[in-house]
Length: 417
Image 1 (cartoon, one colour):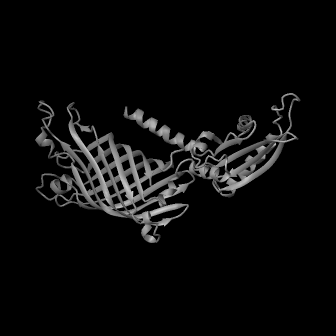
Image 2: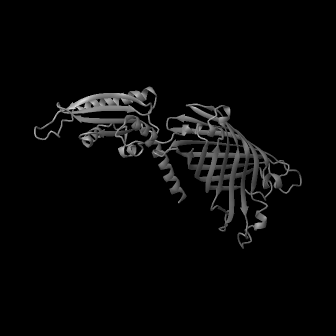
Image 3: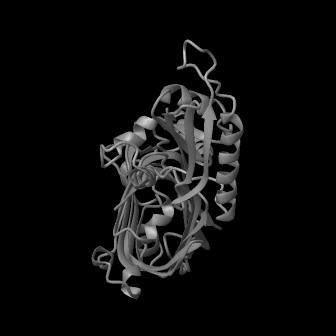
């Protein structure tokens, strides 16, 4: 079930990437033969453009005074469209005059205008016209639009609220599903009371927030880049067992980090921030009964003194960044963890030990098409805690070192205000 869900999430994410890379266009027609004019234009739209229903644009109009150009451009901005093709027809003595207007709605710029006279195809039914002269004008309109997009080095329109808007948002909320794994191993274990641990495919829920108080007032200055952040993840339905024994015991995995971030670089290419905070990561086991009545199976009281249970508390210091590639942004970060405590392994089993830790993340973010202020994220989080155990003669636990690796693959959405 988990594999099925993850596959569908990945398909949704990457199909969204492909979708978002297409420029979007709305065709609007007003006047006589409006519907047929709209159909004629729709038939020649280049295949690399995505046609958006004109109803979406009309729904965002703030005025009912017809196809007012200023209002149309404003509505197109809301929908994050690339272009707007406007057709206005009016009967004349010579035939049906059609004005063809093309707008680059990213730059609020008119890129094409032409008046075309359509002649009637029959003497009795003057509502029938020869639409062929429009073909070359439509082609020229799209050529000019493509040229305008190329000038600004835009290959695709922002169909949703682009992730780059994060540098202006005062609040960011995110929520997601995570698949996690852990591998804990000892180096040169000499006593038989030290158990390694491994789990793959653990289910977690992750949520968090970023808050930038100075962005609410638009005061400006370096303080606009200073904010507070919190990230929390917790496992659900996670059980563990001793190899060779069918019975399981409850296992809890939680991750929490909160603190300050200061965005020191914010431009059209990169957004980078220093991060300082406090964190806790716990991996604990709950033994409620003996695992088995077998003589070979360990008791709960024995296991609790052997399993690698940890309770990390640390100061979190590092850098996080977002590199912007059109609609898809790369997310990366690296942090050092100054450990304040390690839990059972470092504080109980090996009280003379020293330990250090680092963590990092790497992923992608993409604006959700046609849903303002939302983005989807796929992020791999990795932490690595390493021990120099330093046992002394006569100690009950003896090993040279230990390595604890935790991985979480996060898939979720973020909302920007």
